[in-house]
Length: 185
Image (tube, rainbow, N blue to C red):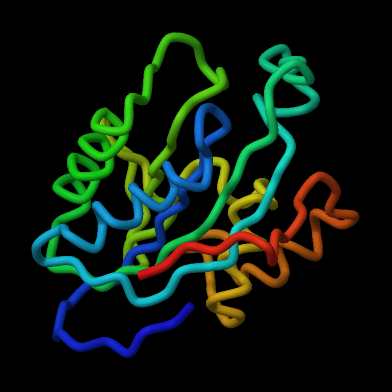
């Protein structure tokens, strides 16, 4: 779903929403609603909803986990225009997660919601609070597929065109578009 930009915000960000606990669609909608209600931020586009298999850790590493006992995720990507700084946007994302009962007990565990900053303008930065672009976005079809839906010409800073990143991930398994579900602005 696209909307024309109404305000003259100077920055553009890509946010990924996902969750696999509770009422998944309602939680994604609540996160989107919270973004819509955020001062100095306008939601420009929302991807279709995707159902995706749980994913945890690099597949060929000691950090890889068996997540087969977790429920599937619902995922979507939101494009925003904003005057928020990257760290202020991160604080807002974390506040939305907290309001929607996100618990951070174990890495890659099941969760009610994730609100991740995937990209912020063409910024490439890493500090103790924020890494942009998201450090694993280039290998996550559950982010790239919905992003490509709403912005076919998108480029992930430092990595290149989203379309090329998707091509490198083929075959893409475990990412299913759910046309029977949608998020509303």
